[in-house]
Amino acid sequence: MPIRQPPVVDNSIQTAGYFMARLVKMGRYGYIFLGGALGAMARYMLNELAIINFPGETTQLISLFVINLFGAYLLGLTVRHPYFTSGCKNLWGAGFAGGFTTMSGVTVFMAVTDLDQWIWGMLIAGFITFSIGFRQGRLAERKQENQLA
Amino acid sequence: MIQSTLPSDPIFAIAVVLGIGIMGGIASVVRVSITSWRGFLPWGTMTVNTVAAVAIGFWFAFFPNESTVGWVTAIIALGFAGGLSTFSTLMSDMVFYFQRGRMMQMIFSAAGNIFIPLTGLLVITASF
Image 1 (spheres, each protein chain N blue to C red):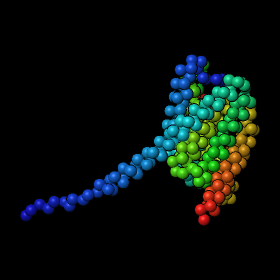
Image 2: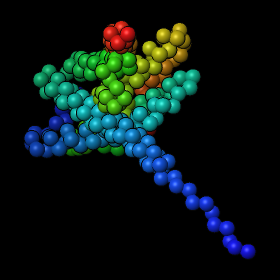
Image 3: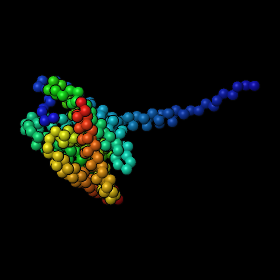
Image 4: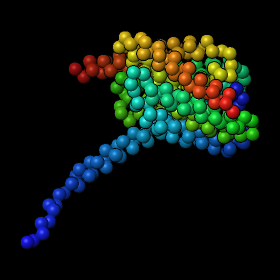
């Protein structure tokens, strides 16, 4: 009795699709890596610029405020703004804004200094700046939809 | 923390900034992978913030004299831990809860992201 051979299935298209999906996913992480690296370097340079010129706890607090509020605004803007497509959103939203803002600096600042009450103000201000960015992005999205309609 | 950690040699300073960028990029990929963990509260955001604070606590506990290893401290604390922890994602979570009227979840996520990393940092620094 002849041995039955298994049917030959050409799944090269599925395999190519699988590898393309993997490459797209890795590309997403590449954008996040690049954005996070840019954000961390920008945060460090901004922080150093502030500390070298105006040493003191208040400077550190202002630096944390500027960094975190700008990062929150940028992340809010990238949520709905039509300019930020998937790659651009990963680069500037999840990557840059996430790497630029810091909570560990806030935690160490709270542990080292006595200016804790300002951190709660930072939370409220960050909430407001994120909302402003989110609203601006949504308005731009609606404007583009109205132009297309 | 308040002192500057930038080396005086310009070539070395550029290398330190690039090192901070590489560590920040790696930490960002880890952060995005972890912050997708959500439940009643944004557990992923709390985890990355706590891990970053505990990492800084361990670093300062083992190497308290930061003047000798200032640039390494900058790469670990400002690069890796700074890139791992995030403030903007917490704001995103808080606005997400606020828009849906979940005030308790919003308050708990804000308080948890402040107090849990702070507790971790203080416990680590007090233990060594």
